[in-house]
Length: 378
Ligand code: CAA
Image 1 (cartoon, rainbow, N blue to C red):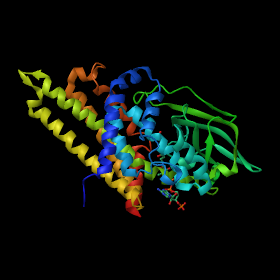
Image 2: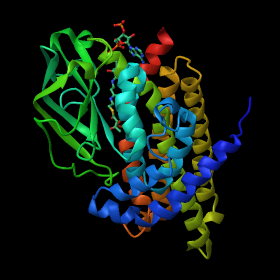
Image 3: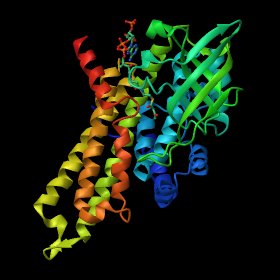
Image 4: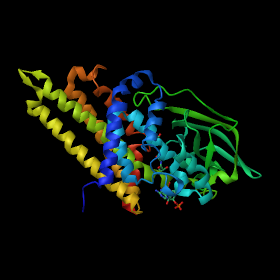
């Protein structure tokens, strides 16, 4: 068993770390306050090969592995998870094409994503169907050589910024799983509109919106997989994209630890730095051990994906463990900072707000436990 990264992965990690420290850290608080979308910074990251990392090389992409993508994502999230989510969401958006696209569809949709900076959003959740994917209601009605989409998606990352969407719709809501189809949909088709950017607690730089589909006509050639396979396409996608969520959470927590270490060395109480007190040392030690464990689980789940093994259990374990860990670690970081930690003058309250979303999106941690339990029972 080899725990070291390859030379190529170390170079990739260093590039992502430098970008994060130089381009994201200095501006993150400003974007958090304004809620603006950092499109230019993300475009710059794309130029460096840090966005859409998992487009296979035969379609012009970098062909990075899930593990490579986790390495990059941890670094970006160290700078700001709002930025990290916006970038990681492109691999989520394009993954249904990788998973279920025909050769022609991959050439048509992946090559342009590799050639120029574009965003693609994954449109699965609905206001009444977040955890219960099979309960989604967005209708796809067959009409000649097209499908007509009607309904709305909710909480869509990059919803107002994306050039393309991968959309999950049902031919028959009563058929649940068996009725769902996946489509590639350009965001400028007539009938598509989106709501206002959600005013979120954390990860405020990332763009999250409702998207409305009002009689949107999509050619049948843009359906991914067979009719009724959309549910499995969504699940296979999430198996591959939950490890990077573990990496995002690890990045947030690592930042919280580094900020806490520095503060504990400077802040004095009872005449000496608080880092000298065992009460604080133990909190820092717990943070460090939990971060290491989360990273190992994340890498292991990415390895399961990269080696083509059944990854569902491991992806859910990594996502659930790492994101619960990030919530704990950032909460403890605020505790280390005391009263200062509760103010916007210091960076840790943002980390705690940002971490909360990690337990909710890409499948709540209750759903991850459900997946793990079902896999155990298989
Ligand atoms: N791979 C392949 N097939 C799978 C699968 C997987 N991982 N998981 C399930 N399936 C198959 C099952 O084998 C079953 O197949 P058969 O019908 O042939 O037997 C079928 O799919 C139905 O499976 P279940 O009975 O397990 O389905 P369910 O309705 O009970 O739901 C669930 C399962 C796990 C709860 C699922 O609905 C789920 O994952 N929900 C969470 C959704 C989610 O994660 N949303 C995130 C949105 S994206 C986002 O948040 C990102 C962002 O903004 C950044």
